[in-house]
Length: 124
Image 1 (cartoon, rainbow, N blue to C red):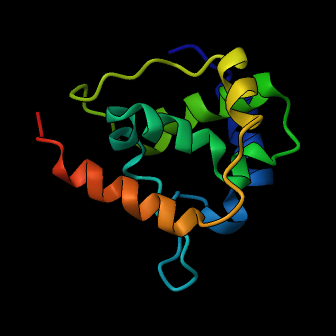
Image 2 (image 1 turned 30 degrees about the vertical axis):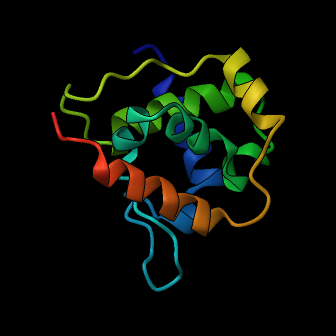
Image 3 (image 1 turned 90 degrees about the horizontal axis):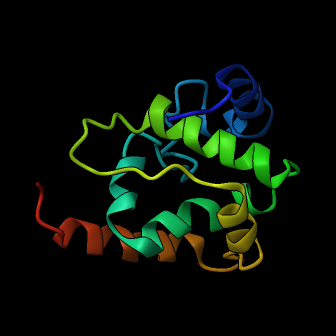
């Protein structure tokens, strides 16, 4: 997948690392999820959308192109994809469309419902 890793890593450090940590581990104590299962969210269209619609991404000061770059880098850096979950890179236009419909309330509940649905999807 094509992305500018150096720019994405810098953008992660400036916009995401404060909550998710340098290694994407998150913080259970603070209710910040780990990024190590991002690939699972690709199994459902609404899961993929969730990754961009969450407040930290949708309200980011990054441009749509830079946010797409960051999301694609995060998928490779943290998701631990093993090839069993197909990943279509995020495009600038898709990011722009998803950012126009951010999740503003109930993010934790929204994620929990998605995870429950993902847990029901057979592993392949």
